[in-house]
Length: 302
Image (cartoon, rainbow, N blue to C red; front, side, top):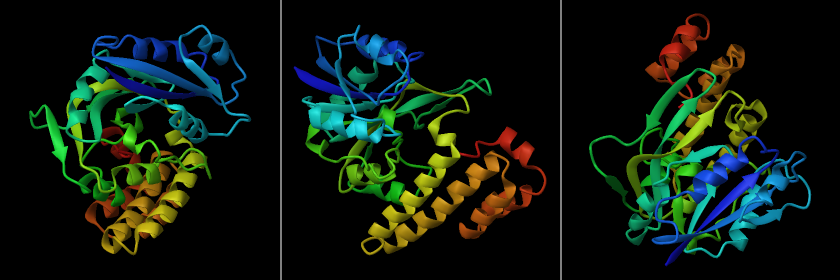
């Protein structure tokens, strides 16, 4: 029977951690179609997270000091994992009961499999799916297709949000950066480089956002911006055209973040660095007037 290693990092997660563990443990097919190894790495929590974890049947590890992000813990988990397949989980995601059993069959065909997911915006009271459409049960992405999509910061192509990915253990030696400790852009590129992959066209977990998520934090956005540019520079010789596009999209991503958070002077600065297009031009114009309408009607930040 195949074993799935689930790597879960926590920090001050007492309000969500039991819910996450319950969803992971209540997977269809567990003990019949596959086994689970749940590895939790706590980043020196100061609340009751560890107390709750000790009441659960998990492998509990810890960083020696607070690392300020999930990547240190993820690397510890990867080094410890003994499963045939690897999943990376966040402490506030909600797995649907058929998540793993829906993905495992496709791992016989490709080393990386992803799925769609549902975003639940608690602040705006909105809910929407991110699923590949077209009626297929799954989509196959040939070698390097998803890598190129991610290198060019394309919004189309395969879903690669971290919680959607399961992959074979042969790729477990691909570790996360620990310079900032929270950026995964380079990890995604290294994971998908020269690999074929599959996406299951179905929402298999819920991702909650409420305006306090790390991806909406300015410090995180600036670190992601800096590390993305460093990473793209490393691919510029092998993929010059694609890396150049990625650099422009990186500027554009930071511009949209500032647009979304009403820091319009900064938004205009990065829009100008992101290259000319009708869409960018319209965003630029509405930094002066009309941004409220745009943010209400369109998904600005992807």
